[in-house]
Length: 170
Image (cartoon, rainbow, N blue to C red; front, side, top):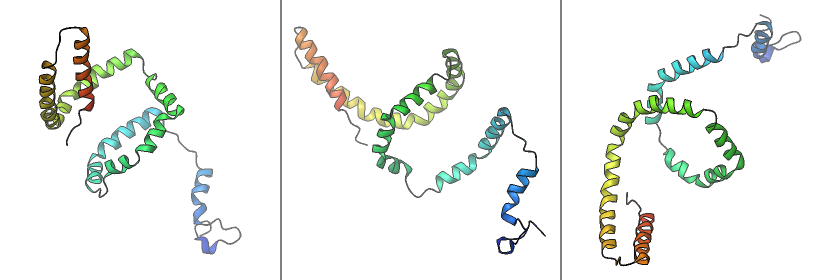
């Protein structure tokens, strides 16, 4: 059949199978979806893809967090790029203050409880390291003199410096 043969039989007057998409595009009227249609399709397909997403995550054999950590210099260079700064600024200005408040008060607020529930074990682990550290720091600061403004400043500076030095063990 002319126009349907493979590349080996592309003689004169024979467009070949690989030209079929071009022929169809040229012969057919292309219907463009509206932004609403694309957004609805995106939401429907993305929601339906949750099991595929979950399976893909479970099938990973290379740690993407480690790979990202290895690219820290690249990340810093991109963050420092003036174009990144402009994109960041423009992104923040896409929403009015009122739009941001409405989304934050509805969508954000509705997700807090689930986020807290999921993060509770990590928060507990963090506090098990932080609270003993701050208790020790408090005792150290209480032992410092506090008779005048200079000594009060020294106590404050000690607290600030110690908190800057805090690093998690895990």
